[in-house]
Image (tube, rainbow, N blue to C red; front, side, top):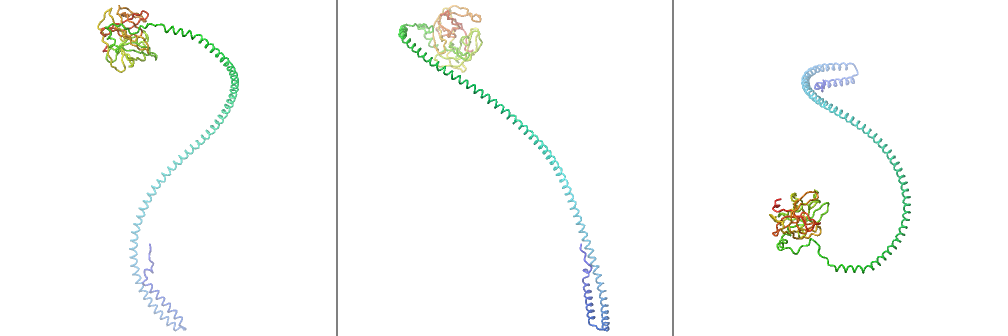
Length: 444
C-alpha cells in the first residue's frame, strides 16, 4: 500500500521555504561578490540577519500551517488505512475461499492421480504377465519348430527309404513283366499256330456238314410232306364244348363277366392263372384257398395278387380280405373298389344235377382263355390232402385242370352251387366240388 512522504503532504509550504533559502543564498553570493571591505559586509550581514529573522517568522508560520495540514492528512490517511484494511480482509477471505477450493480440487486431483496410478500399475502388471506368456509361447513355438524340423527330416528319410524300396520293387516287377511278355509272345505264337489248325479243321467240318445237309435235304422234305398230311385231332380238354345244352346257352354269355383270372406272385414270380368269381358289387372275389397258397401246408402270404377280367385288359391289384377255413375258401378284395356283377348263390342242389363250369384251366400267365364245360354232380367223397386232413367233397365229371381251381359251378338259372377245389388230372375227367349253397358272402 502507498504512503505519501511528508514533503508531498506539505508541498504548499515547502516551496516557499525553498524559494526563501534560494533567494538568501543568491543575495549572499551577490554581497560577497560586491563587497571589498568589511563595512559593507557588516551592513549586509545585518540586512541578512534581519531578513533571516523575517524568514524565521515566516518559517514558524509555515510550520504551524504544515502541522494542521499534517493532522488533516493523518486523518485522511487513517480513514484510507481502515478502508484498505476492510478491503484487505475481504481480499483475504476471497483468497482463503479460493485457497479452500484449490485445496479441494487438489485433493480430488490427488485421488484421481492415485486411481490412475493404481490402474497404471495393474496395466503394467497385466502387460508383464502377457509378456511372460508371450515369452513362454515363443519358447513353445521354437520347441515345436525344432520338433517339426526333426519330424520333417525323419519323414524325408523314411520317404527316401520307401522310394528306394519302391524303385527296387518296380525294377523287379519290370523284370517279371518282361519275362511274362516273353512267355506271352511265345504263347501267342503257339496260339496263332493252333488257330491256323483250327481254321483248317472248321473249314473241313463246314464242308462235311454242307455235304451232309445236301444229302439229307431230300429226306427232310419227305418228312415235311408226311407231317403236312397228318390230321391232328383236338385233344385239349379245355376247349369250349359246342354241345352245351340249351338251358346253359344263355348262362355262358351272361356269366362270363363275373368270372376272373387270378395271378398270384410268390418269390417275385407270378404263378400262372387260376379262377375266381364275384360275390358282391364292389369287386370282392371268392376262390379256392389253394389259389393264394404256395402249398397246402404253407402259411406264406403272396407278394402280389392280380385279377384280370374276361376282356383281358382290366388288370386290378388285389389283397387277401378273409379266409373261410371250413369251406377251404378265401375272399380277396381290390385295393380300390370296382364295380362288379356278382353271382347269386343257390339255396340247394341235388346229386345227379347237371351244372356248368366257367374257368381258366390252362393255368398259364400268357394263355388266359375262358373255357366252359358241363358235368354231373356225383356222390360225396372225402379227400385227403397233404396234411392228412379229410374234407367232404362232391365228385363231378366236368373237364377241368389245375387252373380251374376256384371256378364256379352254375345251375341252369345261373346260380352258384359250389366251386372247384381240386382237379385230379390222374383220374380225369373227374374233379371235386365244395358245396356253398345257402351262404351269403356279400357282407363279408
